[in-house]
Image 1 (cartoon, helix red, strand yellow):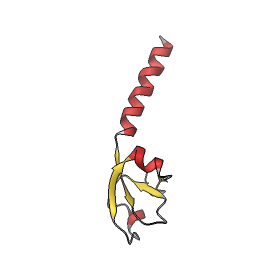
Image 2 (spheres, rainbow, N blue to C red):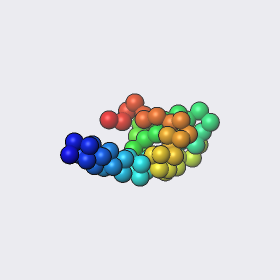
Image 3 (spheres, helix red, strand yellow):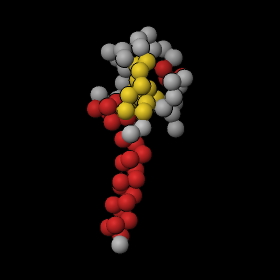
Length: 69
């Protein structure tokens, strides 16, 4: 039963995060992803701001912006 609950929790968390869309700055130096397009961490972005899947942002080595909770 405990293994089943852990499996259900894992599947739930995975489905919530993998499919989530985030915003990234397409500049060479962009290292963060953001949950909202108007995050103040994106205010200095001189390149295009694009929406991508969280899994894609993580594949690119991006981490969560410090302004996000």
